[in-house]
Amino acid sequence: MAKYIDIHTHNPREDVLSPTMAGIHPWQAEIGYELPDLTECDIIGETGLDYACEVDRDRQKELFIKHLAKAQQLSKPVVLHTVRALEDTLKILSDFKAIEGVVFHGFIGSQQQATEALKRGYYLSFGERSLRSARTREAIAITPLERLFAESDDNRDLDIATIYSAIAQIKGVSVEAIAEQTEKNYKTLFRIDE
Image (tube, rainbow, N blue to C red):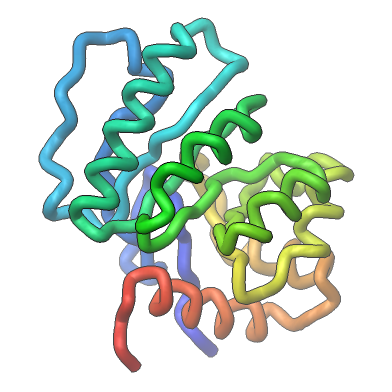
């Protein structure tokens, strides 16, 4: 069986493949910031917009745009934190078409929102919170395996295999099929030759 990919985790494990990340979370947008060195990470983020928090939206957008410009300059993918801000996120992303790959982490949107992101060729990553919502389970069901990732996010006690199993059940395929395709997705996202 293919190795499990955990596309977004705060708790890397040796038996699971996870990219290294660097960036400033939108919750930190109001704190005086300077972008960290992003040259050594695999993926930039998490970055994005969170309209459920009290951080000034203009400051979030400013920080998000800086991350995207750097990602485009360095030819790196981005992992996005997007809460109640999909429309603005997609609008801003449309100015950065040269970005190599976009992953919406912890996707908790509807089937319609998933369709909008998928139409643009973006990836959707699903985790524990995604599985709690009936509307997001519908989004999982319509997400092609070629555009799908799984994640444990910040849950230290969550085995990524649990997420793979739940996604496989929703999609009516084997866990092995999910693992094989997410490994291919990982190689595509990071331009790793076979």
